[in-house]
Image (cartoon, rainbow, N blue to C red; front, side, top):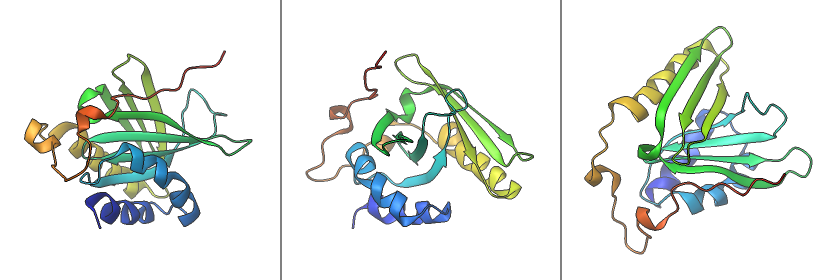
Length: 170
């Protein structure tokens, strides 16, 4: 079993995601993340600037941030964001223990500012998520050797697209 598989399911279980939800989103995440990348967080999130946009699921690894969206009406899955952490700029997060939530914001390489709200069940979880985000975005060194985990038969990180966004339909 590869690193991603060993770490994904425990991370999803830790946030209380249903097995059906996890299995539905897993193929999309699998296409975006290399087998040698460990999962840090898998959780539901919402977008405060698009409250009726459907449900979002966020995957944070040591190297990537991937967000999928499931539409409300037809329950179709689509990839909302797929980017390497080092390509995100102006990453901020605001813990709010009163509302049991953390708002995460970052600017993607294409200049679009993304905002997500992650809701927790208990105020203690808010501070745990704050620590996790601090480790992922602030204290972790980002050397090329650290980002590269060589695995046989896996395409290099450079071969994957930096950011995937479907064309907007107006």
